[in-house]
Length: 461
Image (cartoon, rainbow, N blue to C red; front, side, top):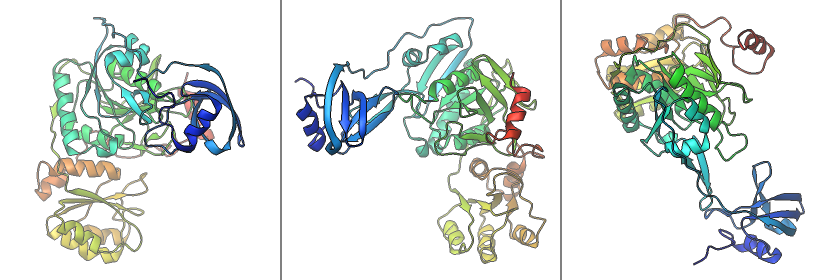
């Protein structure tokens, strides 16, 4: 049976194509009540409505034109459909570093599945080489797809498996590890891997893309090239996140896994180092370190993997008027730890006090962070803070709320002894607690403001 030339179209959309004698993969000029357009007619997703005709414009972007607004369509050519990324054998060079790329489900390179309208990741070495041939100039690449989940579905089973496989690959001789990951929870995974995989001898670099590879503004290729370069050539042997630095296609930043956060829902430069400055700037030609206090690459294969995790922990984001029954309900459901994102220097309202006392007396471990993200918990400044500490709540210095959450999950996966939990929580592993923030840290790399641009000119050659 031949493929339907109006694949996916039904109702008004199908009727307007039939009326004008055009089909899927026709290059057309379209006149409508909303204007004139030239583009390629794309198949419709099975889950899409029946009221639009989808065009891929010359710019590479897709638009939907309402069928009932179309007055004329004329074909001036046809194109053959390509559903698969060209695959080429990834070349091996004994003189280049060996890099392992783990996939968790995030989009690195991709093709569009016109049956569903979904973007399907390309992942084999051959597919990646076909999409991003520059990778072969950097390393010998192997890949393994560990999971195929959206990043919001990453949880304890995935964290544990990922940590253990990283340890195995390092022990087997990998010169660096790259992890393809969805951006929404990448900073959570970066934090927990920092605690689970300690003192690695090689870089562990997480990477993703805000915009998929079929879009002209995609950041996927640039992020991937720089992440692989960091894993292959960087001296920074820590868990880190490699993503766009500025909004333009200039360079990426390497962020420490315990100080990074996704700060914008759609910007390509969404990831920012909070309470500090990034580890390095990186582009295909060079790596510029922005600090000296990172852990260095080593020649040995030793790494400490401790993939403990207790998932009966939660973050409580305080808001004015919060009721104590929320805390009571968390305890009644058997949770063992609570991270509070408090206001100001680490505060909550007085009605919560007795509920927090009941929680700590029941053996629940409560740690205070600040929802301002920048700055430290300072619970000795006001009477409120001192009263809260007397309830058994422990200030978590300048740990980000999500980092404190991941660390408490990791700690409670090992012990429930209150003194030992406190010791582990407040002993820095890799920058999650810092002695001080840089004097200009709040401004540096936070946006296109004059102070930041002046700073960049001093380090960007």
